Length: 87
Image (cartoon, rainbow, N blue to C red; front, side, top):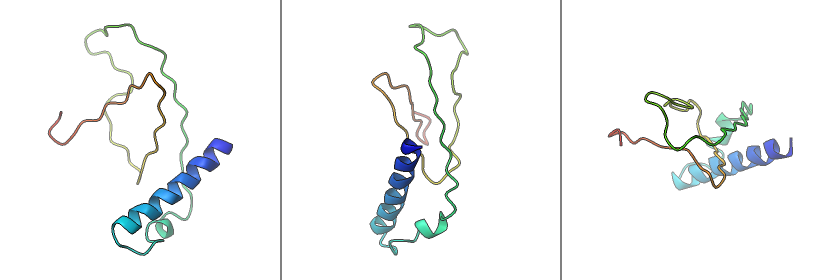
């Protein structure tokens, strides 16, 4: 619960920062996210063998459907981001 509360607080700060950066009222985004519909998913992916088999994936390519996503990674990493050009 402590981690969830910390992430929730970080989200509120980030929403305020977005508003300020866009020269909007400081509560512009926060007022539209006032019901705290947050999802906390704790995922763990064990290390992979050096080479995957053809077509083998873990979490397939997807688009997050929320306003923002806070992602914490360890030193192993694993997140890959694809830009609009498919790179």
